[in-house]
Length: 264
Ligand SMILES: Nc1nc(=O)c2c([nH]1)NC[C@@H]1CN(c3ccc(C(=O)N[C@@H](CCC(=O)O)C(=O)O)cc3)CN21
Ligand SMILES: O=c1ccn([C@H]2C[C@H](O)[C@@H](COP(=O)(O)O)O2)c(=O)[nH]1
Image 1 (cartoon, rainbow, N blue to C red):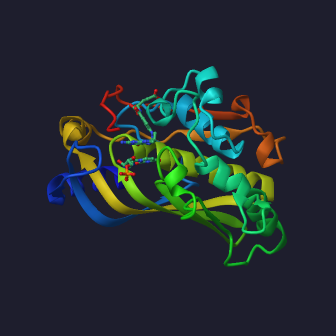
Image 2: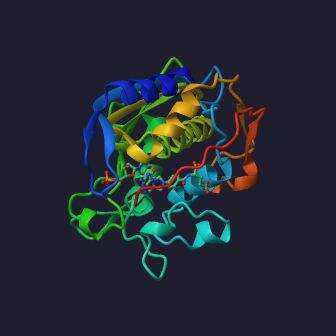
Image 3: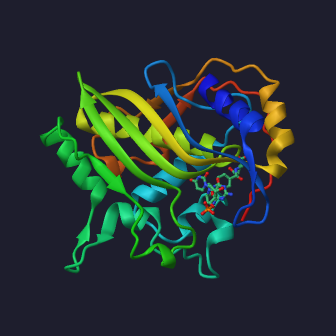
């Protein structure tokens, strides 16, 4: 994951000091792009141990169209706790916009089901898009979406995905976001009969929180290890039928976990 370490090093060395909503303070750069060839291994950060359980459950929770952290809590995942209200509600965040975007005529649009169908029917289309940024609803969300727009692209039997992320917490959020979208790309490829291509990650405000600088240095002092492999249950051909047990990360070797406080 040299791409990730290059980003970490760049922002540490060239980021400008910028205050932020959470009051923590950041080093920040605007605009960055990383490319991951999904055929050379699963893009997991290896210079600290990643909690794949949280990443997998979070993606299945988005795909289920959920707005309440109940499912995450039932599965021991606490990464969204700080943003939920006393009933566990987050408002119309990712899952709701992905699966039931409210149209002006009162209908709900399932953007994910639609994009999968389009990839099957018209693979060459340049309209394979899903957007979570709904200007009419951002004020009702526990946290406005950070990964806001993604596009699929099919060429030579391979499915690629590009994500635009408006705001990127390089130490905590980005390793999760890379793994999550790489996993989603593999899952969509399997259910559309394609091979995985690339995951392209485009960042807007890419920042290192000032209370993550020591942790970033620790990571930069470590050498990346060989990438693991993703193994999906080959019998699953419906994107919404994937369960936790259908997803395996084989051969993950990593340096030890590095704890860091999350900015709320
Ligand atoms: N400041 C901030 N950074 C984020 O990355 C972030 C938010 N806020 N708010 C909403 C979601 C929640 N996400 C999070 C929240 C916490 C962790 C985190 O604490 N990760 C720990 C392990 C936690 C676990 O799996 O239980 C880590 O070491 O990666 C990661 C992503 C991503 N998002
Ligand atoms: O998937 C995610 C979700 C959130 N983040 C980070 C990016 C920022 O550090 C905060 C959001 O704060 P804003 O003030 O709304 O930008 O959460 C992430 O990196 N990945």
